[in-house]
Length: 130
Image (cartoon, rainbow, N blue to C red; front, side, top):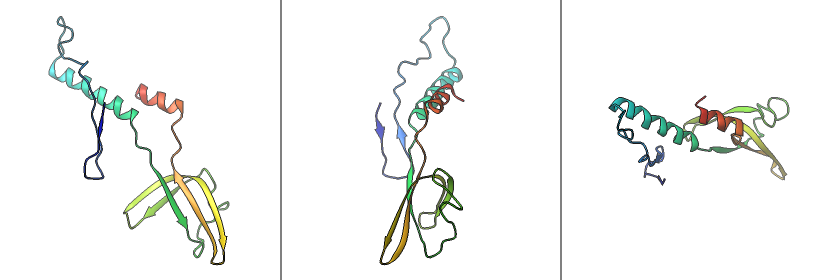
């Protein structure tokens, strides 16, 4: 199995070797074209579930406009909504880490945002199709 990364950034391709799935594997009960397509689609969905993208984000919280305060409005482990107008994205992400800095320019805070690694329970549910 190989992955191919095309020139455009919003598309990902995954090659899946499904040569083991044949419509005429059982000569006594060959699969119809619709049944064969369903078997291939199922294999594709299983493989896609095994190759989920892991995304992580970081953001700098400006202390000049302290609209939301750590420990009061949100906590480590909370899910918050972050918007980046420059990139045109809005995501709900988990606050995974906080780094507070104090310098002559004042105080700043850097949040590490992302999604936790899937648990074994979540991975098994994906494989089971739940």
